[in-house]
Length: 395
Ligand code: SF4
Ligand code: SF4
Image: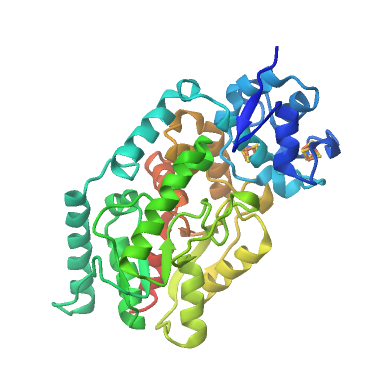
């Protein structure tokens, strides 16, 4: 007996709801070619893969599809989508399956991450005192670097042009990253501010399937932006519903009170308009981790062009980019570290093949995952967040 499912006020059986979600890109067009499974880093885990999952849905085996633990291995990296000849949006199908899991069916680490996030607004359970302490540390670094003993990192400044939301996990791992952002804003004369409380920039709804978390996350950002009266918000996580290069389709949203952008876009504008000048290229061969939710060429071209202006040489990771765009960090953010083996192995192999001194990351989740990989001894290269290499080229 199949359950009638309900989502967003619409009820029906899984096949119908999937068709509705996918719109004109119907699951019925699936060729069963397994191209998706061939690139999926977690194919074969829990005895299944994306192609098999789609066949279950097509064969109307609803309960098997809804109960497969495989969905929790999927990081929504979109590698499958990028190679599917029929452009079937598999990550959205997996997201839909996750959204039908009742809270008690969620893996325990996911439940714990959600609880932490709801209680504190971030996944580190960081409270304002600790956050402000880290901001003060970054301010000290900024003062030493610029030689300006009175320079401050603005907090809750009204009507600034930019609101920078830096995830507390980044601040905790490397507080100097905030000094790097502040250096760029100082040199451009940018009007900016931080919020006075830590804000988790990861939109956990994607990886957990809990739409209500995404709504809460959006409301919190909207509240911050409209209270402070800023024009733009910068988020340091790519895989979210507000990101200019995050997942496409109906998942995408816009803020009512401000525009959302990302540091590479902003820096590109600064350089184009002459507001920011590169002093010297950093003598370093770099490679870069392309944010997984944008496996198209447009963003890769932009970030590659930026890096070519900042360092002496840029190398692409060796394997076909669309085959392994994901670092697996989404699972880390959802507390599912023990399920990251396949991503870790793929990324370690890829990094072994690329002759570079450092890997540059543009997304906080990638940054944290690469720091983790480095800590585990899986990669030998230095790991830098984009603002770090940028500020090195400015002095
Ligand atoms: S989004 Fe990534 S992890 Fe999920 S099914 Fe597709 S390739 Fe696999
Ligand atoms: S790549 Fe696309 S068409 Fe081929 S099996 Fe996967 S979903 Fe179906």
